[in-house]
Image (cartoon, rainbow, N blue to C red; front, side, top):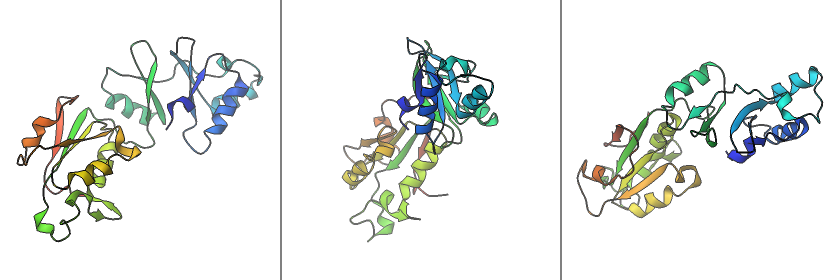
Length: 227
């Protein structure tokens, strides 16, 4: 999702809002309106525009005639999971994440996540997978395919669906393959590969994970199993 596609300036007209919504057709059709200081002042959907037009608003009127100033938001320094749960109950599909000055710093797509847990995750993926040889002679165990995608992707995708966006994968054996795998755009900003300088045992590489954001850390050790 490109954040800029969902942002409209307060100087825009209803016509411009409608055109922007049309470009989002087939996706998450919500716009957020910002003032001259890039601060969030409201949100607008195609339903808001439709109701405005029925009420007599002109396409050339300012977007303030149809946007909703009371739109829900999440502040960057507050726990997100409660807000996300509330938004889902209210049927909201897209939440703006704002800083202390009400500037949008990110968007939370509630169509792709089920929650937003205040948790970091560390996946231990440095083992040699010896019990699965010869399959693991040339492919690291986390990249072996299960159900059409690598084992580790099942884990990472499930974590991301829960809104966990700070994930570490510790690597050693055939590490280059795993590092290259997580360079894919889907994972690049969420998954951080941490290289063990040598084999550090079951939990040894946890100390190498710098940048943990939360007090709760989920550590996945054995097998990287799917549900």
